[in-house]
Length: 202
Image (cartoon, rainbow, N blue to C red; front, top):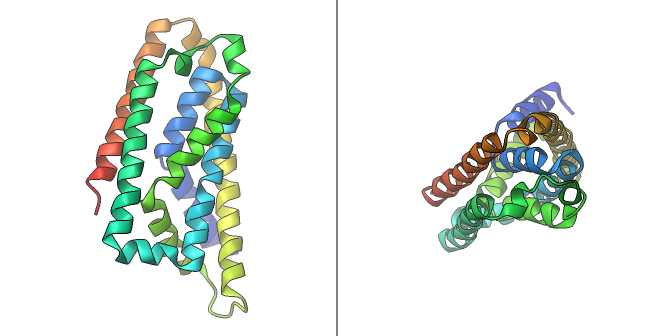
């Protein structure tokens, strides 16, 4: 496990993406425990992409335009759905104590789907992990699995931190409903932007 891999992974995980945006939105609207569920779901959503890169399915997505397009537009549709849901669903921004303590499973499932339905994640792992594979590795598959596991653990910890920061700011937002509405619109717009960006990707 090289320092280069750890530092590069940290930079990649810290960069704002779909998972970060969703975790921040949940932490801000539902509190810290719900943000942990979102962070866990985002991390679990990495598993199919990591497995795909290890067994070579990501290469199939890269060479098969149809397979990539099917998965891509499924992801686009889900991102647009998340944008609409964030904007219209009052449950998504319910700041009551009961709401904070419920729906953790649904939050985790939504977070998992955000990553599973992103074909670029599989291609990312296909390009990213082999760069840090030692030529002397006796079992390349196990080495790649170890690298993926470390990346996932780092993702979980960083996303929990993001969620904690959002939950910390939640008290400020609770006292200002107009601010929460502004955040809701920003998150909805970001999901829509990410969906449009994914739709335009090759």
